[in-house]
Length: 190
Image 1 (tube, rainbow, N blue to C red):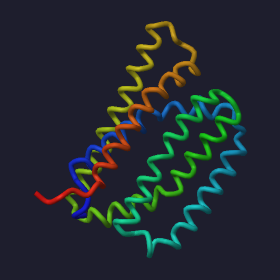
Image 2: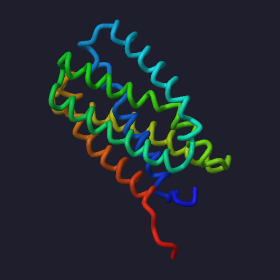
Image 3: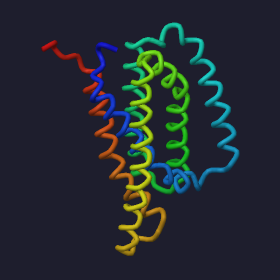
Image 4: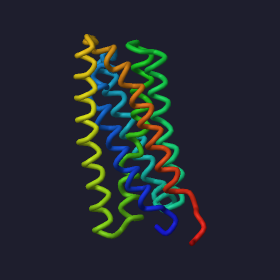
């Protein structure tokens, strides 16, 4: 844990959860063109992918692989934001966004386990989870206010609201990635 800048990592946890809270409702609109069968196939792929990942735990449940994998995973939201902005409300766009989300979900258990091992102190884990819950609540509130503001401007079509939300999500993800990158950047001891 000596090489992780804790203050920025705590900001990362807050902003990451804020992003999740803001984006939560959007998937219902984005995934509308998909058949329910796709969710079954995606769930199977998710379970198999996560299962295969468990065979690598002996090598990757360490700080250095955790950093590399987490930074890689945090690049994926840029891909699904861009995908949705380029292919809004289409089957292709929905399918691609769904696949990208599934990739991030494959690593969910691993990331949780690695974080628990890396930040092994109860008080530290409590601080991380508190930031996560605060960020999630703030994100849900920001999304509510965002949609309310759009409605006050007579932008009531759900697809238009979700499209505009993705510009806010892009800015949030920039903050998420910056704080995570900075948390993992080595600095000289002062």
